[in-house]
Amino acid sequence: MRHAVIMAGGAGVRLWPLSRRERPKQVLDIIGGKSLIRRAYDRVAAVLPGDAIHVIASEAHLPAIRKAIPEIPEANLMAEPVGRDTANAVALACAVLEHRDPGAVVSIFTADHLIEPLDRFTTAIQRGFDAVDRSPDALVTFGIRPTRPDTNYGYVQRGESVSPGVFRVGAFKEKPQAEVAREYLKSGEYYWNSGMFVWRAGAMLDLLEQFLPDSHRAVRKIADVWDTPQRAAKLAEVYPALEKVSIDYAVMERAPEVLVVEMAVDWLDIGAWPAMGSVEKADAEGNVAVGAEVISLDANRNLVVSEGDHLVAMIGVEDLIVVHSGDATLICRKDRADDMKKLVALIKDRTGEKYL
Image: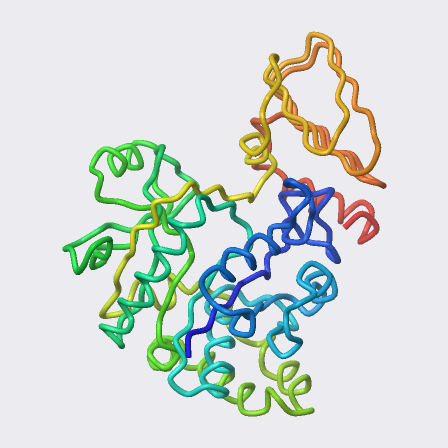
């Protein structure tokens, strides 16, 4: 049977002060009144039935996810007691699904992107499933054709063609310097690494046994008791001790047979506040407002985000990010948005957990 797993484990620190410990960015209704996790679920539901869609996330975030996706079966929610990066999230999901459904084919999706149009997304996913049907030992990733020489993404080099829209992977490349990214864009041979995949659960577990044996042993033990009362105790016993490592580094870059499917979509990573500037239309002065009433005088190219009925008034400011929540307000120059993690760490140091 074909399954989907939506990874929703991110903390969303760079979207503070709206994203918090108990309400991460995936469940914020700040983009057209619809959360990112809801959008991800609806996209996948265009490919697979609801009972084949699963979510893996932090145990602390499950109440918010249940509220965002009330129709998801309780058995399809997988809780991590602590985050251990994508390799272990993937390992756990594959082990549980293989235990429940031997021979399962598993697709992996992210919960923090906007992807349009839907028909191109579904076409690419179907090609990925078909590629695994033809090559059962292959791992399939999805590549986004880059529109700019972005240094914030990893890249996948396209090799020889296997079938329409499907290629062998030439190489995985880490986040490049600007000059290298420009060469990638110019060559036409590179995709952005989307973080979405398809494979047989058994094929992935075999590779995990080879490349990440401690995690493989641990998730097999957990899967054996997953649908029993012993699950929580076994998770708490073995999962926190696992090495934090990404699935790309642990497996994808080392696997013998990896294919890439071109996904010809508009793909926006909502990882930090500047990305929100691409979501809503700007006014004549270049200001973008999300959920906020904004009145400005000689103010240009600002991003304003607010919860609730709140007026933000601006005079003579440029290139700022202003985010208002119930108990905290962020004011930040756009060119300093990459320092959000440092700011949140400072807030924690000064005030503890109060504003986190």
